[in-house]
Length: 193
Image (cartoon, rainbow, N blue to C red; front, top):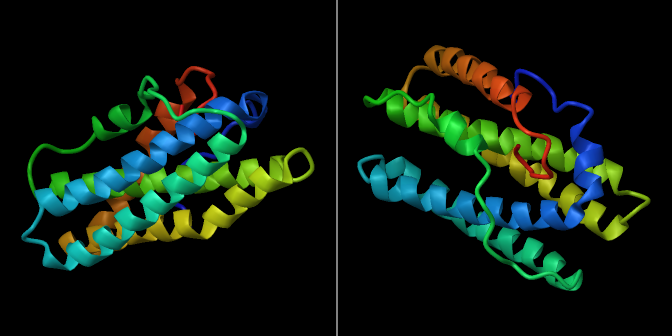
C-alpha cells in the first residue's frame, strides 16, 4: 500500500524515543515543508488545473498538522526554532529527471514516498509511545490515515501525467533509491534520516 522498498530498521525507533523533543521539532518542520511543497507545485504547474484543488486542500491539511505539532511542542515547554535540514529529501529529489513530464512525475512520486515513510514511522511512534506517552501516541495515531491518503494522492496525481504502468515502474525505482538513502543515513533522531 505504501510502496516502500524496505521497512525502517530496528535502530530508528529507540533513537526516536530517546529524543522525542528532536523528533517533534523535526516533525513540525516536515509538516511546514509539506504544505510549502504542495503550494509550490500549484505555482509551478498551473497548466495542470486538476492539481489545484487537491494540492490546495493538502496544503491546508499539512498546515493544520503543523499547528497540532506546534501545540505539542509548546505543551512540552519547547519552542519552534530553526533546524538544519535533513539531507533525506534533497538526496531523494536528486533522482528527479530534469525534463518534463518526467520531472513532474518524479517530483510527485518522491513526495508520495516521503508521505509513505512518514506514515510508517508515525505508526512506529504511535505503537512505541502507547504506555510511555499516550497523548503523543494519540497524535501520531491520529495522523496515520492522513499520511496514507497524502501518499495515495501524489501517486494518483502522477497517473494524471503518465500512464499507470509507467508510474508504477518509476515508483518502484524511486522506492529503491529511497531505501538506499535511509540505509546510508546517519543515526540521528529525525522523522526522515
